[in-house]
Length: 104
Image (cartoon, rainbow, N blue to C red; front, side, top):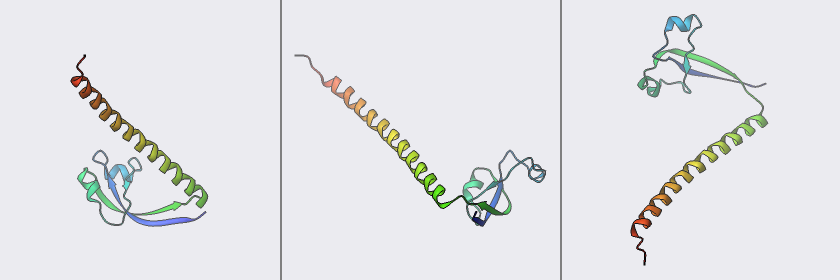
């Protein structure tokens, strides 16, 4: 099994404490990059240090299957959202046409 190791930043949520994290009761959130994240800090997360993360990577075949599954899920979501927008437009058109209808 391959390993991926990288450095990231660690943050605590507004509801966590450093003492809780040191005691193993609170788990820090780990960012995806080496630099500090204003995204987390803007949401009230406190930077508490740097983390070295090691990932036990799955096989290439499994990773590809997971990527394809994730993309198919994203595609289904996008299609559903698009269909909802189209239905709203069609509903509005129908309502406007009903206003214009004049029986003969």
